Length: 468
Ligand code: NAD
Image 1 (cartoon, rainbow, N blue to C red):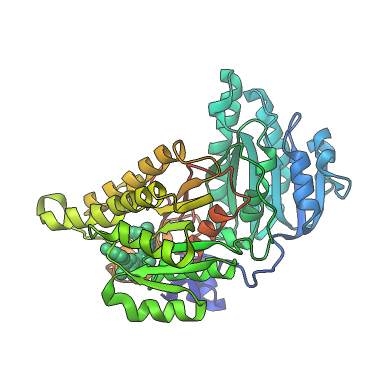
Image 2: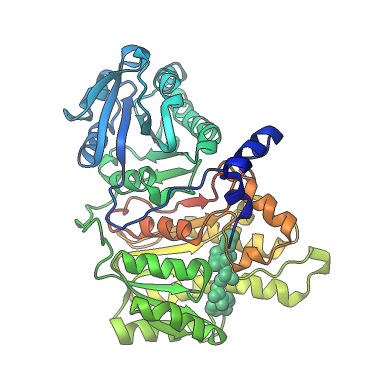
């Protein structure tokens, strides 16, 4: 779908008009152009506070990237920054460098009490204005739930408010800020998340907090096609976000089974044919759907590695005016069907080792929405389901959710224009997302090296102002 305002405001006349009238001036986002594009380029500044535990991993990941890595010196001198590897160069920010950074990365895992939060100010105060357009801020902390002392938990929790506020300050440059909360000793599970949040793949993901736990060593993968050899099931794949998920997972090496309802078969065939995937006609709410899907994956592939529950519907009405079948259908498609399909695949042991399940929630499931009691209940239910299942799935398997905000699809094109415009502008990046933004987030969850990312709900919403 086309966002005319975004186009207009990026013309010379439009830019001046928006500035004069105090209107939002969104910057077109920089999305991935080629699958083999380096995940980060340009100048990256790293820092660490008081014995950061992730700095060596950070040095390894960035050292192997196409970026030139600097560590802060001068007032923000942090001995640990030097541990980011001998490829890094010391940079005195107080000297007034004219450099523009493509990313600022700070290891805050060593901050043990509120006094030590000063390290954040010392690192970011001189550097934040030097973050370039489309820049990335990534902060690494320790999950406060794993901190025994209250002062330690306070310092680590403080990173959440800090990161979300930075996201709101840098969004106008098309830049993002995100926080990775590690479990103790989970440094070796950071790489896939660092690569995602530093790259163009996460263009519309900002203000998010991801928990990374310990996991078994992941098999080494081909960074350009990490899903090679994997079989993916994508529901609702005939259009919109589902079609983009099918394309993105195929790009990453997977063989995709696209599923949709019978009337959408022509569209589904058109999506699946160039991808050389398989199309399956199925209404996921039908009583025999779980068995039909399980039989199909067993017959054609002997099992499935990635299950993406994307199919969804809205049937909006205020609660007092809502017909019964609006309620029933919305809960059935968006929530119940996912549970039944997963149960069948797992009971028949068709979800393979290191399997990945991804469910689609919505910011409506987090913040609630007028006229969407049914949809919001279903999408909130998805979050509860994912969090509970994350503790129950077999070791190596993960289950996570994405909660899209306003994404440009046929679903949102059908909204009244005033609501549509509000949906687009009410986030830190002042624009709607594209289906591919959701698809890239799912591809990161599905990566074999994302084994430590389990039970998370990541919003793909440009840091929507709605919700918590
Ligand atoms: P869409 O309406 O364009 O596509 C949904 C697909 O699901 C369609 O192809 C449809 O035929 C299929 N589907 C519906 N009922 C089905 C059933 N019973 N069995 C099998 N397939 C069925 O929607 P979209 O905008 O691409 O959204 C995809 C997902 O993302 C949905 O779960 C939606 O709730 C969620 N979401 C979208 C947005 C957004 O802004 N577009 C925001 C938040 C969440």
